[in-house]
Length: 501
Image 1 (cartoon, helix red, strand yellow):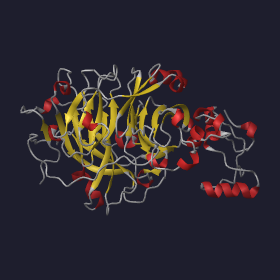
Image 2 (cartoon, rainbow, N blue to C red):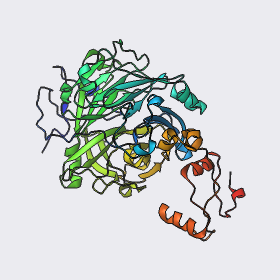
Image 3 (cartoon, rainbow, N blue to C red):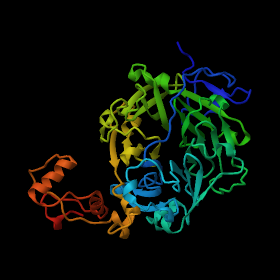
Image 4 (tube, rainbow, N blue to C red):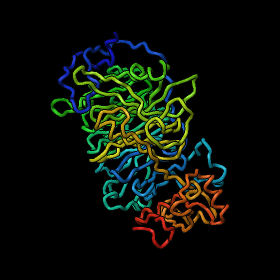
């Protein structure tokens, strides 16, 4: 019997008590622990390189609006999840004088232009007047006229494009040896602005002050070194604050580490250089799903008694579409258990399929997930990079009922239509458009086959049918979004004037 399902490590010689850790997150407490002086003998992990072009990072502002960094257009986008993914705000991150001269030549390319930031994650806080973005090489701060949360309350993001400035941000207390090495990963800012952290694949975790992000800040430091508290497999990727803000969740290729951010007195131990963390071995719990094949993992969020982890098995060195797994906290045994697959395949080829649970398909490149703030449901947002879409995974049933897959469904917010052309094509009609205006473009052509003529066609077949009957084309996503944004929906009569409101 393997007792050390998830071992506790501590960077000091003082052994912490179980009572020091809060129950709400069920932070991987277990019956036995060891000190960080142990050397871990593990199989070398597969590097979780950040690949693909599309929505690499997502930050839910509230239950409607999401801030997205899209590496295919080197921009921040504000996406309206209530209007089928309408882009209601944007900011190009590089100097527009360095835009490509030939936009067509760059469409679909995987090599960024030298002047582009190539963003991979984004975060901010409710009162922050800065957005924080990471690229593989460095970090950036985006100065805002007012916090994103205020813009969202006013349903007005126009100032993002007109009154924001982008500057590189690398505090003095962060070692220069980690800058420019291509291994910087994700950023997480506490919603209340109390702390902020950045992960580095082989360096650990850096801290900074999100409310006063200046290079000379004493709060900016190398908060967690590789080797502290058993965090030494050197493949750190995902990083998130827990809902209680008492812990920080780090995800590496094989483990989840849950780091204490508040002690019994409310003090952050990391501020004093003390690292206390629980280690949850994901391979140990989940590889039985694939006959013991090795797996790799990218990111984790915790909801109540459950940890939801993004990953997939490694078969013959080929990474297929990712899947989402759920582990359950057992209060009596004080350990995590029961890794179950709740969405996606993990072994089938990367694809874009919405559906229920394991019927859904993702691309192979997502590395960032986030929780959509809501009082009535539990929705995980997956930044599905190569599908150029956000994917909403509704796990409400799996959380509230305890059923493994009950009610788990995957839907898409496909915001990215022609955005590269809109931003970079230097000819009409593209030069007169913006991401915001193109989402308001209204179309009148749509195919209606009558009340009893409902047809289930894919896009190509539907286009062909429209051409065959001579009524034109299928509505574009922006055209449909424009209808939905006005509260207009098609009626069975097919009369354009009778669309309901």
